[in-house]
Length: 440
Image (cartoon, rainbow, N blue to C red; front, side, top):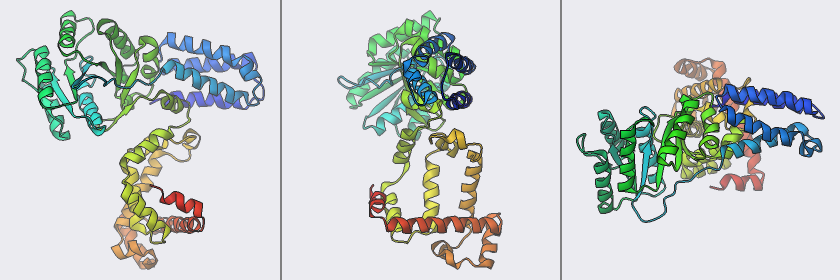
């Protein structure tokens, strides 16, 4: 997401950065390129126009004129105005007595059923007890799909087949939630067009009976401007409290994410960033703005590491490193922990400045190196992994054959491993760094 937009904006800012002083003409040329990049990314025309007016007023003023680094000053202004356009990140309002009701609405095919399961999984991870409700009786597969997802994730699903009216199903689910001490009820309602009066009347009836604390529109980011129009229409009809963008990982342009808050006034609360149940992130405008401008997203990277990395194993590995007992089995374990965090390409894009080095270090190349390293280590015996000094010429040839690589690749891995050992010895001799390594 935002790959093309990010590259184009980086090119504009790089050119500005090479100029010692920025004239009004320089700013106008740069903003014309920014305008084109935003429109190509499918950002709403009115949003682009308002955004650039605000940026220009500040970029030709004293704020930039008096700056020792005018190019960086413009980047700072663009970042701040982009944040203003994206609005504040919205958190779920789960106040009040249990059970709190969250109603999901949207068009067919927007990903409501999958999103309902992802949201339930996230709420359970935060200590809530969710109940999923299969209220889409117009698409038979929806009920089955939600039941299967619930079984897969060990989350309770309330369903009553296809003959009971959806408002009644939802009302019965509230009663079940009260009896079963569920904290949150998530209503997976049927997909409907915003112009379908009968279906919209059904939503009104469900809302009257269940009194949801959140009415969230699930919108497909890949529909671009149409997603923004759908959100605006639903908000005017049913009064949304938030938005969830799905299939964000498949949307290379990203215009919907930038436009939605500005057009509807409704906050984006979550983004679906993949097919897996845990590929679901809270919407952080500051992090998204940083990604768009090529500044990385260190906070999300840290959160992924914290969520996936086993703290006991991490502490154990750190102690082994510092006592010179770190071997190739530990090295393999570190690679496997990194892979748990998600596709390497996605992780690399969160590193500040990655755009500048991506031509030399592609995600595909790095992913391939990790796979090759795994194959080489798996082709060693346990004794060899624990004592790489055993790897003489004949053993290296055997390992290379077993891993489908060359002896040179085996030597490269061993050299990297020895460099890591040397670094560990240096850390051992530095008390401050040693204490940092030992912190959980």
